[in-house]
Amino acid sequence: MSDAVLRAGGVDAGYGALQILFGVDLEVRQGEHVLVFGPNGAGKSTLIKALFGLVKPSAGHVTLAGRDVTGRAPEGMVAHGMAYVPQVSNVFGSMTVLENLEIGGARLSRSRREARIEEMVALFPVLGDRRKQSAGTLSGGERQMLALARALIPEPSVLLLDEPSAGVAPKIVEEIFHLVSGLRRTGVSVLMIEQNARQALPHVDRGYVLEGGAVRMTDTAASLLDNAEISKLYLGG
Ligand SMILES: Nc1ncnc2c1ncn2[C@@H]1O[C@H](COP(=O)(O)OP(=O)(O)O)[C@@H](O)[C@H]1O
Ligand SMILES: [Mg+2]
Image (cartoon, rainbow, N blue to C red):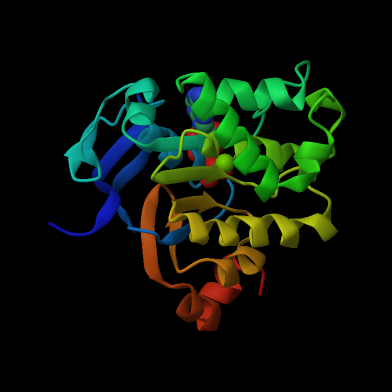
């Protein structure tokens, strides 16, 4: 047994006859923060969807805390401790901040839900100030914080984040990465995708380069940042 919270082994996946992922091996260890990066269209979002059960692998397996969960639907993944924040449409814009958080805790008892919402408001104070406001009026950064907070309410063991800096003003991007990095204190493991890999890598432990639906390289974040070839090919020089 390894200490991997989440593991993909030899995962093939795609859309109908269109194969996108080819034998992907990846793991996220207990408490670890991992970045997946690579060119547009590499299959990064598809990989996260295959891990979360939104796309069914046609080969290989996914294990969550040592349990084979290959082919389960997202509800099953959530029940076993996975949470997913999609790249777009990750909050309900017509509902208030508080209502969005309540949805995150829909499976919890009322007292537990209320307690978790207060913990999230302590972690993201801006949400507390805006709890009665409709989520559609939030800035890009606040919206990402709300999506993060909502996903964290059930206390997942592993959090999948698809481009948390998307739609966020450049000067707030660093704040988002810093907040995600700060989640280490809670013990949650993170698998994050980012276009903005040069800026995200210093905040994570390890990274995977995905290109053409296959893992090209994996190493510590520090080594990837130091690697001249990786830098030139995938980190914008
Ligand atoms: N629902 C879908 N149906 C068919 N093809 C898709 C679908 N979603 C994504 N693709 C294709 O899969 C490939 C990988 O997309 P994606 O996983 O979103 O890449 P990335 O997140 O790395 O930019 C792209 O060629 C994209 O056009
Ligand atoms: Mg994507």
